[in-house]
Image (cartoon, rainbow, N blue to C red; front, side):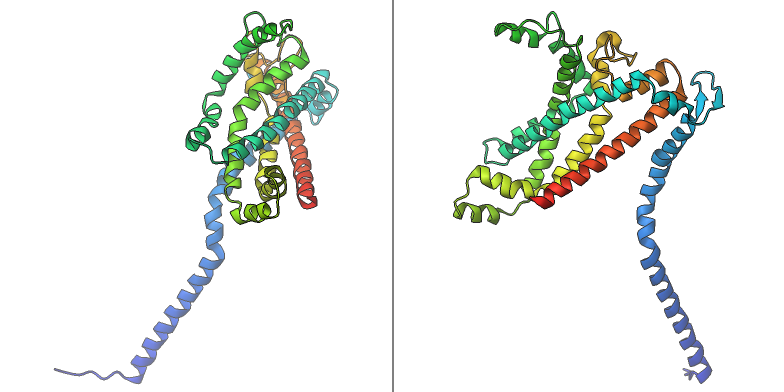
Amino acid sequence: MTLRVQSPGDVGRGGGAREERRRWRLRLLRWDTKYTPYLIIAPFFVIFGIFGLYPLLFTGWVSLNDWHLIDGATRFVGLDNFSVLLSDPNFYNALLNTFSLFLMSTIPQLLLALGLAALLDRGLRGRMFWRAGVLLPNVISVAAVALVFAQLFGRDFGVVNYLLGLVGIDPVDWRANTWSSHIAVSVMVIWRWTGYNALLYLAAMQAVPKDRYESAMLDGAGRWRMFWSITVPSIRPTIIFTVITSTIGGLQLFTEPQLFDPGGTGTGTGGSDRQFQTLTMYMYEKGFRLFDAGYAAAIAWVLFLVVLMVAIVNFVLTRRIAKGS
């Protein structure tokens, strides 16, 4: 057997290779630390860019054109669509209806959800059944919900008018007037979304440390006092989240009022006198009934700005209320 003794040159070459590999590993480690977080979050921004940012920018471009949806004829008109929109009485009627339906449905919905969550947080018998049951309206198809409520609020054979007749109140034509149609649509929205928000509140309530309630009980605090002094402040982030999401959804209300008028389904007019037409319904009417894509895109951009401003105002107000309490 022959033994080979490494020469100093061999040792130097081996040490240099090891040093080069060590430097390469350090370089890879630095790249990994620096760029991997961006690679992880990149899919979100790619998808958002394709399905969110690009449609938004393209809609902005369409709003600057006289764009017919059927024949594809386009003509650049600048801000003319917005100028006409701001002098359009139907636009202001739809805007007023949108805010009315938003306020009449969102505020009671969140208050009812908060109370319902408080009840579900107690030691009820069959808790899982009740918790699953409150989500059932959200699982049912919104089209089915709208059609059922359209029958409930029927003028001649509706269940609601029948119940009102039992207490001596004359039948109401729920679709004919602004206030009655807004009540009917708001009840529909409240019924559908209250359980969903209640489960969000319930999940937040169950994360509140129990020792806070035990300390409050030792100090003699009642259940009502503990709810407003411990529970509500502890679930502020969830309340802020539901306020913002409900604001966005309420200002984009479409399906419920669209299907509430069976005779006008597909037109987007929201009743015989546009008494419950929302901004999204007006946009639908202009874009898919009159095929004026440029004007519809202008409505979409105004709606986007309105939702953005109201969401920011809601966020600021809820944060200030949370800090002040």
